[in-house]
Structures are given as C-alpha cells and as structure tokens.
Length: 422
Image (cartoon, rainbow, N blue to C red; front, top):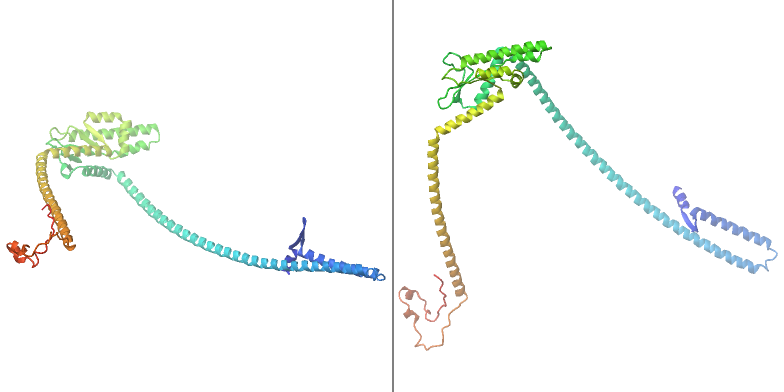
C-alpha cells in the first residue's frame, strides 16, 4: 500500500507551472468520464424529441467523445507505462540503495573492528610501557632507599671524630693512588723525628719528599651553619679558627724537616664547602698558613696538584730514559732503511716481471696471427711455371735436422711467413 501511495503521489503531468500527480490525473480522468456520461444522458433526455434533427450532431459528438476517450485511454496507457517504468526505476534504485547501504555498513564494521583492534593494541603497548616505567620507578625508589641508608651511614661516620678522620684520609689516599704510580708515594710513613704523616710523595732527582696530611674540622663548621644568632655564629667561628690554627701548627712543627721534606706541606680538607668557607670568611687563617708554609687544599686542588706532580715524574722518567729512547729511535731508522731497500728491490722485480709479461703477450699475439694465416692457407705466390728439371728440390736445400723432418711435398709448398720484431 505504501508503494502504491508513493506511486500515486509521483508527478505524472505538468501543464505550465502546475504539476499533477498520478492520483490526481486518474481522478480527473474518472471525473471526466462521469461528466461525459452525465452530459450524454442529459443531452439524450433533452433532445429525445429531436433525435432525427440532432442525429448528425449526436453522431458528431459521439465521434468527438470517442476521440476524447481514445485520447484518454492513450493517456492512461502512457500513464501506466510511466508508472511501470517508475516502478522499475524505484526497484532498481531500491536495490542500489540496499547495496550501497550494505557496502557502507560492511566498511564501517571493518573500520570499527580495525579501530578497536588498534585501540586494544595501543592500550596494551601503553600498559606495557607503564609497567616498564613502574619497574623503573620501583628500581629508583630502591636506589633512593639504599642511598638514604648510605647517607645515614655517612652521617654516622661523620659524627664520630675518628671515623671522620679515616674518611678524609681514605679520600686523600684515593686521589693520590689514582694519579701517581705506586712507587711514588707512601702512606703512614715514619719520618726521622718519629712523626707519621698521612702521605709522603717521593720527588724526582733526589729532591725532598712532599708531605700531605688530612684534616676534617667538621664539628666547628657545623656549629657555624647551625648558629641561631650572631653571638653563637661568632663563637662557632672562633672555635673553627682555633681548630684550623692547631692543625696548621701541628703540620708545620712535625712534618717540615730540613733536607728530608719539602719546605711546604699540604693540609688536605676533604670538603669543598669547608675549603670555600675558609677562603671566604677566614682570610687570616690563609695568611697564617702561608707564613707557616702550609697550603690548604681541597679535593679538586689536590687532584690538580697530583696531576702536576704526575707530569713532573713523567718528565723525569723521560729524561732518565732519554738515551734508551735515542737508541730505539736509531734502531727504528735502521729498520726503516732496510725496509726501503727491500721495497726498492721488490719494485725492480715487479718491473722486470711486468716487462717479461709484455714480451710473452707480444709473442702470443704473433703466434696467434701466424696460426690464423696457416688456417686460412695464405701461401706465397710460386711465380711463373718452370719445367720439372729446373724446379729446385726443397729436400736438397734443407740441411741438418730440418731435412730429415721436412714433409714429402716441402719443395712444392712454400708458406708466406712475415717475420716479427723478434
């Protein structure tokens, strides 16, 4: 029913700017038939008494009515044809629409499935990366916990005066051992006056040794940092100054021995912050240390000094081994000379071999040309014919082994041979 109603609502006739649907045209035709029928009945009723007179007019009207009916039937058949074609078009369009919708639904289904697959894959990868990052975070947390434990241990070490001194000494020993050879220093060596510095560095060329002693005045420096008012800070600064002066005096009196040690000794402070505090706020201590011929060094300055000493020791060893190096250089030059002679001889052999190869190639080319001439039977012209009595016997002209090995017709055939350069 819906399809019939849609077909009836379709436009079937257009007159000017007015469009009529199939249903309207059908209704109009039906009404036209009714009106014609009524008109015929009325005309018959009115003109019943004048049939004879109006017979011709009735016949004419009948013909006109038939023509109109024929036109109407023709229009109706055309309308039915159009309706059939419209029905075919609608069925075709409906099939195409169903196919398009099916294709689009299939494509959408595939895209949705692929999108869901990609989303699941991306989610899985993100979860895997998240797990890796969580593992890294767990590892970092464990490292932080271990580092916190080490910091607590370091704090416990620095809180004890003896362990703090051992820490500073170990740091100094590590710097010295990393920069100098093992025979260039001695830890805890005993001097002639019975004192034992932390490190004695042996200088080259019989020069006196250099003394390095580690001191770690941490308590007074912590007191300076934790002072709550200027009075406390001043008292802590005085205590810090006294500790440094005691260390400077002890190094100057115990470790500076004429002829046995250098005129200058190093006081190693294993903290860059303490070293900076001394140079920034305690200039008098620096001047007093210079007067006492004691140099205060931090880890970076000690490392730099060790590098300088390393260069000095290396230069001294180079000077000691200069004659050995010179002898090795002379022997190296002799080896290079022998190598040059042997290379030149080898070059001469290569040149001679190259010339011999060129000669061999030339001979091979000549042999190839002669073989081709023999193959092509390129013989020399024997000249005008002679009588048998005057023809020379080739066998009699050959002498030695050639006569024995010559063929029977050697006197009749003569090969044209072009001699080469050789």
